Length: 333
Image (tube, rainbow, N blue to C red; front, side, top):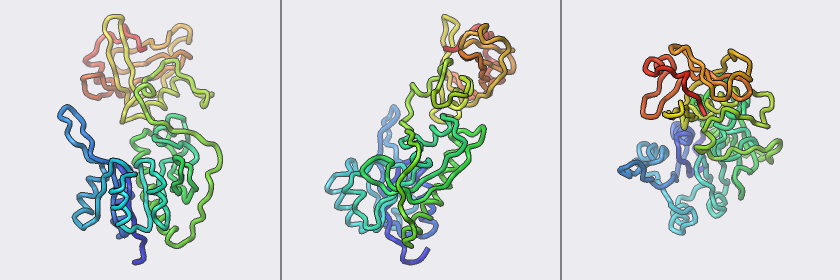
């Protein structure tokens, strides 16, 4: 990096946004300010939680005089005045909030965003999760210029990343975070050198809506028109990996009297032990010691390999079965 580095204001919230900021700091880029969300109360004691970006900034940047802003409203005149006073050349946004034009149009070099997908695939709040849930073989990261719509701006740079056959959101998130950090620096250098030509997004457009509890609830008759060749067990396996370790897919089983709730962290495909018509969806098969198999509506079978019963700790199936007897009397629903 040369001494003529643009003055940057960095905007972000979660851990995914910390790695690019840290790389910019480690390579001595000119960080003029950091913008993140206000502290939020959580838990029974309503303790104020700070964003990962704020925690990083307070440790590494605020002691050096870098301004930290936490606006409630991005259109607040006091905030806009403080932002202008930073005299930034470039804004960088990673996992933050939708910016009004009065903000993203402010710096002379523009405002670019790092997104965890190969746009226009998986526009939205949870692109990394959805790439796994939908059975994609590759993912990646994109830097693009922000405009008036969410995730629609002209692309600056992209990097692809293969998705492992058994990969979950935890490992893919970590890999894309590191790739994204490098791409942010490359994008800054490209803009500074004037060698990047923004290109319109082209190709298939898919969404990546925000995750919710209903999405994470396992359905034993699951089908997906976007994945016509996948069995129900394969779709559930992809859902589990796309939500593991957080927020985790959920399921429940009952014997007609007692009901138990579970989080499913790891599963795999198992071979059916009988004709599909002989095993209703949710039927449990187990030897009581080593495995829990659950039949799906299409006859495919899922092996539950790592689970957590509500109120208990996360454990491998073998360990769970040491303390849970007669599981075949139950049915998942």
